[in-house]
Length: 76
Image 1 (cartoon, rainbow, N blue to C red):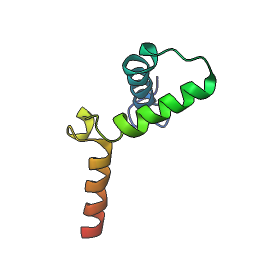
Image 2 (cartoon, rainbow, N blue to C red):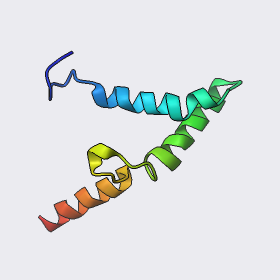
Image 3 (cartoon, helix red, strand yellow):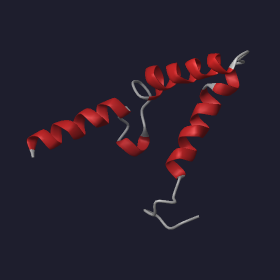
């Protein structure tokens, strides 16, 4: 593993895929690849980005955090 801040550090991606698998994929069965793709897309867009709170973002959703960053950039 690389040192903190290095582009080879993939802890964020690993955390996301763990959440995806544990919270969604392992609880469903899919007959076709397209079914899985649509289901996962729906989970990301309706739950992960819009309602799931993230501790590393100050317990805000990704959308709330992005809006806050956008507003800060407008104010600057």
